[in-house]
Image 1: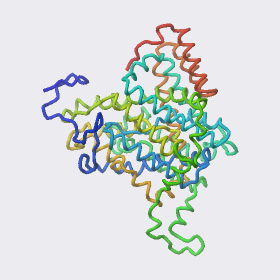
Image 2: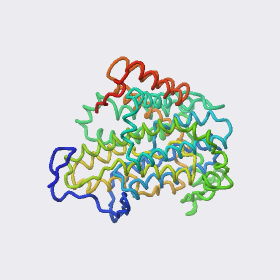
Image 3: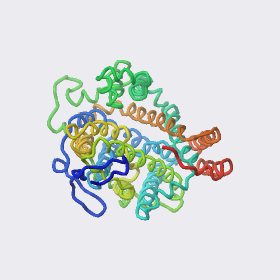
Length: 482
């Protein structure tokens, strides 16, 4: 019997990693061979994952000049790269974007006037982020680098990302009004219901009494988002005319749906031709001058700090489940995670460059939902990879190939994006403000975050670093409490 260092207990002799195909430091797993279906996670994939994956479509259309079809194709391509985390590299996390970095990268990108230069800038951010992960993974210096970042600066980066996300939703977008004012009822209801189900302390007591309420809370963003979809047409904020036109002719009212209308075929060739790093038509490579990479570096460093925190969070969540599941050895390897994230972001940049949410290690909400059922024992979930594969529908974003689903979600994608960003802002704020231990550190956190949100990431990093050294001295590098 071997001792489990995370729990202090001894794992039984039957404890072993989930089977897979080893290649280098990675382990590939094949659906239905190394992972089986788990219907509760599959249901949540149908409700939540599709809308979440498509939430950034409106931004790709307005900020990067993409057609709706190309923007959806980009979301499908990034979803395949995302799923390679567990499908190809053997990561035991529910992967996601570096969501808190999304508003920071987007704000910096929108400050670039010309769309081709904007595309090159965001592509540079993706490349530099990938290189940071890959190089710190190869050298195994990731943990050391994070220890060199003063704690108030870490907190300030997270707080600045949260503040940027919230402020951005109330700020006009070019000639358009703020998204919160465009969908006031839908966004208010969806965010309100989600915050209530996820964070309400009085509701926690009711969840213990009423099981259905706990199940509803476990669905994360789904209940609030579905409510917005239902209420939207009643308050004239959402129209499903395009979805109806897929089935019925708007003039005659006759049923016109055919089998060809069932599937959406992504235009990967057009995406690569117009946005790939190495495409001669895209011209991105020519615009990637040294100054562009230099401008991208502060954002990539901030994204790395945020993503490293996600690695720590995901590791803590899985370690906490080990006590209840001594039958499976979950292989946690920070260096493997760094390498996989480096490869994912570099492939993202090479294939379809400007994916500003970035490839990240963790979708914390999904991870918590999967692990909570995994804790209940082998009868509830045989392996952690069964739950992860099922939540992402076996590593292939099948739902994104169904045209009716895409057309159903299209009118409410702005609501989905606002819901994602406002929840990100809320979560980043309470995480960031839980780190400081005294009033000086609180002040430094708010100062750094405010400069990041109102001016730029690079200025915020400089202000946070200098102020931390001057006001705290060596205490700025104190050990962070769990």
